[in-house]
Length: 163
Image (cartoon, rainbow, N blue to C red; front, top):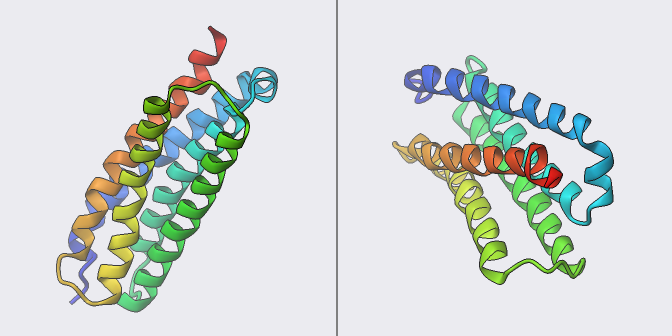
């Protein structure tokens, strides 16, 4: 029995939304490229948005691939989640070193939201690897928080930097 079969509609919806939002981020970056490159830390924010949305797009694509053994899907989801977590965490650490005057609570909220998005994705991969029956349910909060932080970052890149 394929544990992913019941998830195809969810995965198609996630892939569609992630593709649309990733396109929005690319347009926002293109429109505001000069401003993004001038303001310290904004390019890091743009890369975070691209990584988080591209990550769930890629997860949806690999999960929809037919006749994949569960261990392969577990490995793919775990790899995408782990690489996304590493790259975003590196960017957030780098943004700390820029010495930006961002309130601690605001930075902590940004970091927390990304953790809430990425850790359930990593748990999905681990749960699939261990053969847990309801492993895919971890993907729901991962996708929800990925969309929240992706849309928020898109807003910052498209609107807030022009203020």
